[in-house]
Image (cartoon, rainbow, N blue to C red; front, side):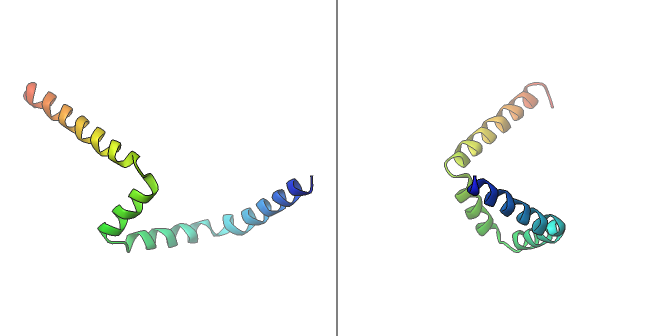
Length: 76
C-alpha cells in the first residue's frame, strides 16, 4: 500500500517535471544525436538493437534484391 502510494507520487512528480519541458528535452536529444559521427551512431544502434540488427540487415538486403529482380524482370 505504501509502496504504491510512493510510486504514484513519484510518477506524478516526474510527469509534472518532464511534460512542461518535453520540447526542450527533445531538442537537446536531437542536438546530441546530430553531433554524433557515423561510427558513433552505428555503435549506439548496435548496442541498443543487439543481435536483431543482423537480421534486419539481411532482411533489408533480401527485400531489396527481390524488388530489384522484379523490376528487372518486368522492364522497370
